Length: 385
Image 1 (cartoon, one colour):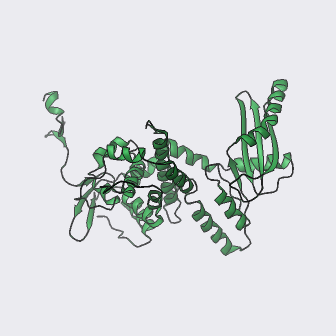
Image 2 (cartoon, rainbow, N blue to C red):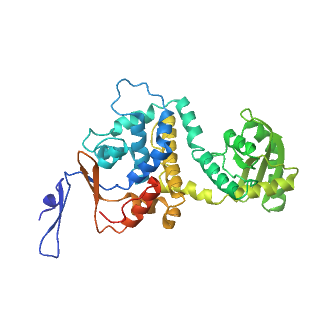
C-alpha cells in the first residue's frame, strides 16, 4: 500500500494484524461527536443567559442570514466543547448538534462561517461591550445569592451573609443588594488616580522599611470613600507590600465598619481567603482557553473574552445545580468534556422529533441521564438507547 493511497482525503487505510485491513472513512450521514452539548443548551434555555447576552448587541444589518443569538451560541457552546478557535466553525457549520443549539434542524442551511463570525466579533460597539460587562461580570451572582440566602432564611430569618468578590464581580449593584439585605461585603477594588495618590505614601513607607530591614513589609491604611457610581460612602482599605518580588499595591472596599489599621488587616485577610474563586479563573484561562484573543482589534478581543466568560459562567452554574452528580460538581472543564460533552451520536430527523442514537456500549450513559434529569427537572428513561 503506497503512502499516497493510505492518505487519501476521504479515508485513511491502516494495516492490521487481523484478517482484514482497517479503513477510517468520513461519513456523509448526520453524525455528531458533541451530543452532550444539548444538555447545556437545555440549561441555558432555562436561564436565558445567551439570549440576554445577545440582546446587549446592536444589530444594524439588513436581512441577516444568521441571528446574533445564533452566532453567540455557536461561539459559547463551541468554547465549552473545546473549539475555542473561530476557524473551527468552518467545519462545524454543518454539525447537526450545533444546528440544534442554534434552533435549526439538522437539514437546515449551514450556520455562520468563520468570516461571518469574525465580522460579528469586529462589529461590536463600545456601548454593547459595556452592557455585556454589566451582564457577565455579575452574571448569576444575584440569582445564586438570592437562592442561598432564601435557603438560610428558611432555617433562620435573621441570617446575614458575608459576600466576598473580586473586582470583576463586585459592582454598585452588588453593593446595593448587600445593603438592602443588611449583608456585609468585602470586594476587590480596581485602582484609580485618587486612590493611588492616597496610598502612595503607604507604599513608599513599605519600600523604605524593606530597604532598611530586608524583611518583607505588609502595611495597611483605611479611609471613607465614595466613587461617582456609588450610592453612599464605604470603607476602602489599601494594602501595600514590598519584598524581594517587588512592590504590590491593592485595594478593597467593604460596608463593614473598619476603624483602624489592625481591623483593616483583618478585613483584608478575610477577603483574601476567598480561595475557591481562584480555581474558576484558572478554568477560564486554561480549561476554556480564555486567553485565546488573537483578533487585531481591541474591541473584538474584548468580546471574545466576554464570550469565554459566558461559557465559564454557564459551566459553573450547571456544575452547582443542587442535584448534580457528586463527581461532576467538582469536575474541571476537561472532565465535563470527556464525560458529558464528547458523546458520539447518530442524528436522525423524523417528521415528529429529532433522535440522537448513542452507542449502547458508551460507559457514561447513567451519568448523562442524571445530568439530563437535573437540567430538565423531569423524569427521563433510565434505560440506554
